[in-house]
Length: 114
Ligand SMILES: [Zn+2]
Image 1 (tube, rainbow, N blue to C red):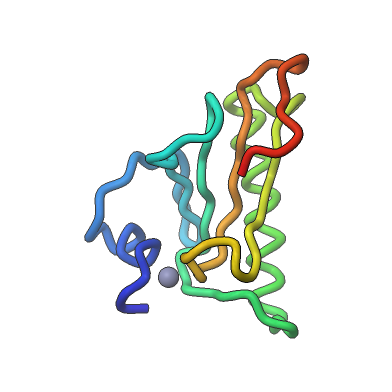
Image 2 (tube, protein in one colour):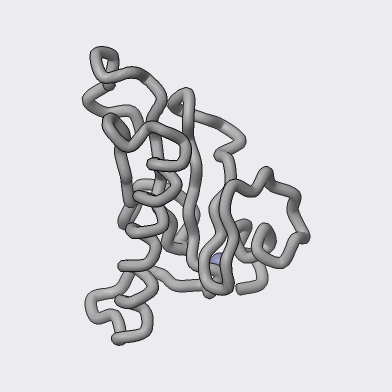
């Protein structure tokens, strides 16, 4: 989508510090981190929240979560991390994305932070 900041990152029109990339999914550091580790994972295809996802979108959403788990293991934050989807009027970016937050250490995990 033309004016979508995440599509621009996918198309390398806006720079980002990538932490993961495959054919369908891109992971990069949030430029305004809310945690010691704060990555964003997005499908490369512009998908927005809707009531009924088609099968292809659902598969991609599942892959997004399994990729988040894989990255959290690689970064050694899997034992204490959060995966967060912002949905509806919580933000200005409609392109589906999952926040991966971690790195606080188990005793210091905030209840809410995004
Ligand atoms: Zn987009």
